[in-house]
Image (tube, rainbow, N blue to C red; front, side, top):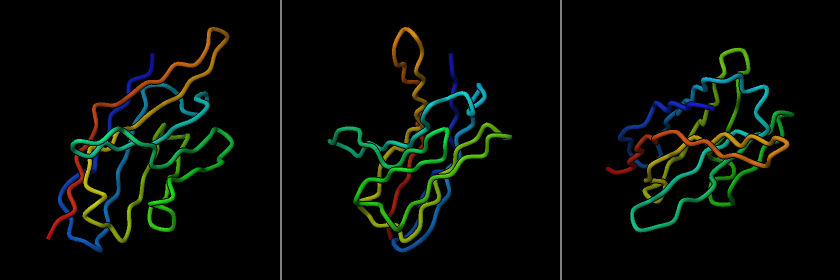
Length: 119
């Protein structure tokens, strides 16, 4: 079992910055991939950014150059630094842990944190 707790959401003006954190109850060095997803009203949940245990990152095209994912294994925390935010970035952001084992792949989710980009 992995419990994930997100924090850092809030209201920010267009062009502003915001940082999200996700604390894991399990050592993230043992988790294959940590990621951030988001879900806007009326839309499906989508991948924003992911980082593997080896530090390899992957970003959605819509956020490349503006959002940065990072991890601190010592703190069991994954971060999402968001710069140059746009109104279309408004969504609930969810932390994800993807764990592979002999029995298959298990995804764990946090409860989400709301990010609103508006003037």
